[in-house]
Length: 504
Ligand code: ATP
Image (cartoon, rainbow, N blue to C red; front, side, top):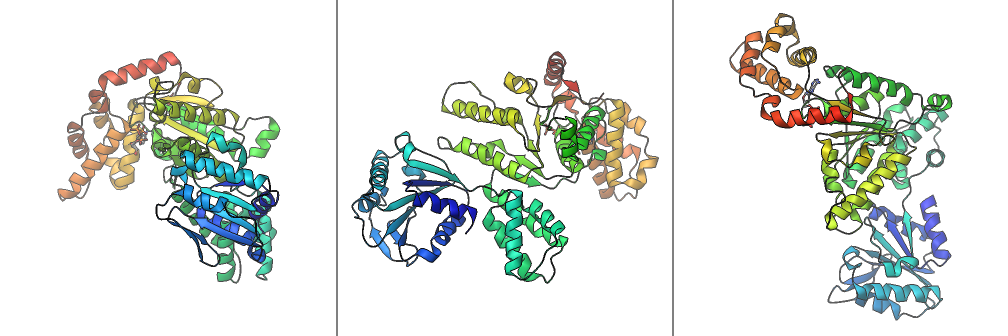
């Protein structure tokens, strides 16, 4: 029996009336309930209501009750009237009930059932399966929330060892440790399934099969829908300029690559960095290059996807995102456009309230986190960010990224020309380009190179010339021209706030 199954059984045996399994993996939680009673089904009936018009015995498929109006209250009424019988314990799984959680009729019946269970009149356990945590105040005290915990390292190692043994295979300890590390963040079911697959398909277990684990992790993150796992291709060498910021990241890399040594030396666990500044000047590319430098997964948090439509849903999603990131740690958690996520804090209306609460839980986590989740938050406009976030102790450092100077522009031109036309780089007079590229951002420069290469190709040319690039510059309206006022305002703002300059 798995740890999770053991916990379910323990709560049921102890007579807890309502268990709330808060999980995205409804199917797996349901499987766990079934296997909890696998050897014991003579005394337990497992019933399920999934939001349709009937209650079924999920072991026999028998319909136990039918309603014509899909009303959960009617279903519960039917259950309340059931007397304890020789049929033994009834486990009543309720799925898709989120929309009913505000219904006073449903709440009253759940309360009545819970009271009957508590007083021994009803031999049953209600199990609510839902990815969303919505609990009405009236029944709060009858509900026990069970999260499908992630396993700790030694538990994962045990799962691997036991499965290997059951399959008559031996895996060296060193490899078990590597597998356990890769499995971190997956549920016990997923670990068992993947490991079983690996064991059954391969005579000898090697390191190369670990790839399957990473694929599964990507799946898991995709399914949860809040985080996106990105495989970064960009390295620090792909960033022109921003030397201060790059040096700072290199120092953090030293800490992250030897956490134990750093801790023993008295170094604090790195929290992360806020990179603010002008659009198209390398904030996102730096977030990606940081993950590549640290050699850890990059998870992008889309704040838009986090906001749910039900009360408590956004917070639950935030908690889930943090849990996922912690389970997968060490990792970089990239929060893009931070200002969009937390705009409207402290305002009025329910939307603002949700944002304020979300912000509060994010801040607490950021302040207290002990796990190696390195946060890289990027923002264009910090003026709309709440001051609490900018206070010392939240991030290890706040950097300001401005428009590249002439030297930085040179490097950016070189990087992008080299990427596309390495052979032509020598013959291109970059100084001439710089003379007419004043105010161009990194993104502008990339656009110039991209466009000129395409034109040269379409024009049947064999090489890219300085002239091609100059033509493209002429057709470009640099960012500093388009956003002149905003950029000047931003620049002043960052200077007053004394953010560290990412460049020098
Ligand atoms: P936004 O705020 O609009 O998201 P950003 O600051 O995050 O902008 P990036 O997405 O990092 O900008 O940059 C856009 C593109 O411009 C990148 O893909 C990269 O190729 C190029 N670029 C920007 N700055 C640099 C730089 N310093 N060195 C090399 N390339 C750069």
